[in-house]
Image 1 (tube, one colour):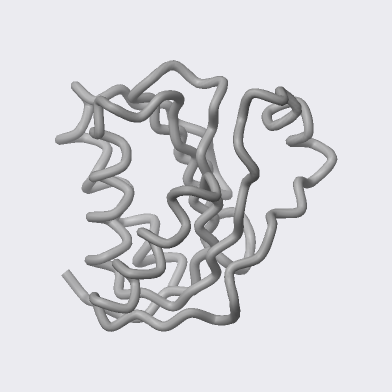
Image 2 (cartoon, rainbow, N blue to C red; image 1 turned 120 degrees about the vertical axis):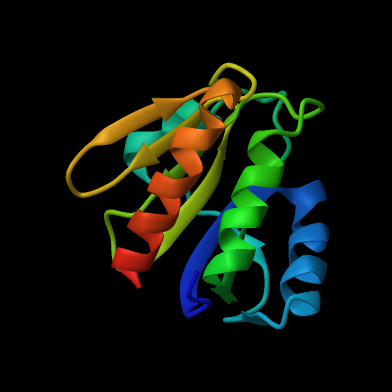
Length: 138
């Protein structure tokens, strides 16, 4: 696997942001700027409107593809986390965001060509596809 640097927006709960920063820096990645509150796009307002969810933060960084795939996999397969995760590769940057309303362990992969939904049992199919899409994006 190539370990080219990829520009990524990690959209996560405020309490998880310091952990993302530490992991990014430890892996040799680089923050693009300070962690900031996430401005929710109008089409995602319903996903984050419930007051029970903590504030959502944006961690913008350059990371290696290997780190990115491992981070996605670790969060996806973490049975202690509620909700799911969306990987959006349609824009100039890859966006990895928490999805509180998805069923626990759900991974949604949005590419320019399609949207695929995976469960933890699909790991052997999902991760190679994710790697292929990320490498093609970079």
